[in-house]
Image (tube, rainbow, N blue to C red; front, side, top):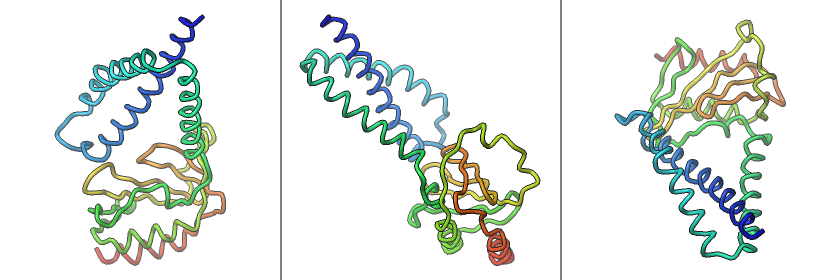
Length: 207
């Protein structure tokens, strides 16, 4: 029975450590490496050749050194943290929270598909401040499965000095997030597209 328990604990810890190492590696990749001369295939090889063995070795070390009773307590705590992260990903939040922006890490913003580009922080901060009044929640892909070509909308991308760009294609009642792909519905929409038109005209004419 103890052998079965040990194998179960080893499997669970191995899976959890792999998810942890992968999350850390993905953050480092997105923040400091993505877009550099290093090809994406290197990251996937890193996952296969290093992360999986590292997760297994870490799990085996813990199983050998720590009593089983403590493992079950630890697994419960880690499972709770992962559940919280899942909840946080799907909870209601401000629309502006979906985008990564820091003035000190800002390079430029592109607005609309064939629109304008700015390297000034004022337009970005004005746009995000406007978007902050709207509440959004993640939805399933199947809930988005409709043609949006006839809907009014706009898109923008914010480019940082380091890390991935963030942006979205936004319509009055829903949006497609680019930087962490996902679909969201606007809970207190529709978004004021008249404001967006005025914003586009205000800064687009400066180009």
